[in-house]
Structures are given as structure tokens and as C-alpha cells.
Amino acid sequence: MSLPVVDLGDTGIKTTTLGFGCATLFRAPDAAERLRLLDVAYEAGIRHFDVAPIYGLGRAEPELGRFLRSRRSDVTVTTKFGQKPTLVGRYMARVQRPLRQLLRSRPVVGDHVRAHAATPSRLLYGEVGYDVAGARRSLRKSLRQLRTDYVDLFLLHDPAPESVRSAEICAFLDDARTAGLIRSWGITGAPEVADEVAQGFGRVPVLQVRGDVFTPPCASIQDGSALITYSVLGDPLARIVRYVRSSDAARERWHAATGADCGDPEVVSSFLLRAAFQANSAGVVLFGATRPPHILMASVIAGQGRHLAVRGNSDLDSFMSLVRTEPLTPGIGARSAS
Image (cartoon, rainbow, N blue to C red):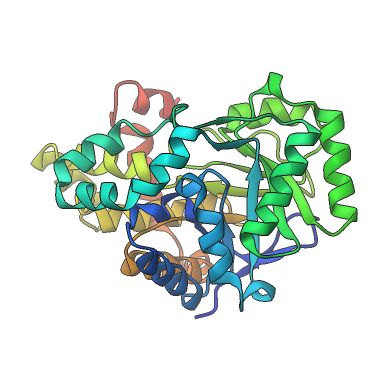
């Protein structure tokens, strides 16, 4: 399958509009299963892979590196710096397979754990600094783990504005790019924090930010900068499905407006992905999944983007109108509609 390709701003990097995010990869407890998911993503046409030293509590980079051995020249890779697993996190990495299997076998327990895991746990990983020494160590280790001599994007990972020495880091990143160790760099995090951190740099080549339907857009995108969005499903998917299923009247109203059953998670996922591609038509949308059919669905939607733009998005427009105006949580509808 061939997916649409975009230029990432003026970085000189081209990649697919859909990227595979490895943050959720370790919800699959078995290494062979995770490799299969990466294979499915590649066969579905995805050519951008996003990872970080903390994903999989330190194990995601080595596994992605093994997957990329014969494919490195065909793909773009993002990794990050500034955070790493703690001693507790590294220990937990050794037992995460049986833990994941337990959560799978007991869905109620798994749902409870995931509901309380939206914010990174400082017990498992923490900030190690955004200075030159930390960036250099992190880059060297990531290159070893990924079995490559360069990464396409090297991002500051969820930095707090006061923790970044902008001038020093910018000089280091420019030197790393000149040396061929990275092709470009940027910042990832919540839009409002990324905006504040970006002000210290003047101009940031790539911003990777949360991009769900309830999150305000990033204000720091400038001409020539690239935008990558993530977490386009997650909480919005659960929130919308829960609300639509809350009453027959709501379900009928959303069906009448969109022509689809918005109590069905797959239907809502499709709408949310389409909305993400529409909102970030010149960049990359990251998507993570542990079921091959979901990866294939996202790839089909990404591949249909241009066709849908020509055909029209009246059903998506109706869906987004409901998202903006219905009281999905207290205050959401009123704020979005204003």
C-alpha cells in the first residue's frame, strides 16, 4: 500500500502523512507480537516511526532498531531526549510482559490502570535535563539502540520551559545536524508548553504536539516549520462513545447528523482520524495500535485523504459540529462553541 507523502516544512525530509507511534507498542506483551505490529505498519505503507528512550521503559528503541535493520533507508525515525527510565522503571521493564498479560486477562483491572496512567509516572521515568551533556549522551545511546548512524528527527521530550538552556541546546543540535547525526530537531509536548519553550529558540523546525479534537492548536508553527500531531484518539474516543451511548436520544441525534452509529468505537475512530488529517494536512499524524486491523484502518483513511478532500466531508463537518456543541463533559460544548 502506498500512502501520501509530505515535506516536513523546510527540513528537507519527506515522509508519509501517517506515522506509527511506538508509545503504545508495549501494550502488546510479547516481542514477537510487537515485531508483527511493526511489520503490519510497514506493509500498510507507513514510513515514519516515532520512539523515545522511555517507551517500553527503555526497550522500545532496541526493538525498533532490530525491525529497521533492512529497512532503514526506506523510513524516517524520530527519537527524543530529556527523559529516561528510573531504576524502578528499568526493573519494571523486566516484568512488564507478565503484567501486560495480567491486564489483558482481566479487562476491568486493565481499564482501571490505563485510566490512571494518562500522566507519565515519575516513579518509572523522569527528566534528566535538556543541557548539552545530557543531549549528547542520549543521542549516542539512541543511535546504538536503534542500530543506525543517524536519526531523522531528534526532539526535546516534554520539556518544562525553565529546564531548557535554549542557546546551548540549539548550538548542539545545529552541530549534530552538520555532523550528519540528525537531519533535524524540534520540541514535543502539550501545545501550550511547546509554544512557551519554542519562544526561547526563536524558530523551531519541527513541533510535535497533542492534536485531538479538544486541544487548541499549536500557536508556534511558522512558515517553513513542520507539524506532527499525536494522541488523536485516546480520551476523545472514550469520551464521545460514552456520551453517545448515554441515551437513545443522543445516539439517534448523532446518527441522523452523520449517517453513522457514533456509539461504535470504530466509527468514531474513523471520524477522529479524518479530523486529524484535515487539521494537519501538511504534516504527519501519529497513530499507535496493538491490533493489525486498526493499523490497516488508519492507513486506508490516510490514503483516502485527497479523495475525501475532493468528494467532500459533509459527514465529518456534521460530526465536528456535534463535538463542538454537545456537552461531552462539563464546559466542553460551551467553550468550543464560543
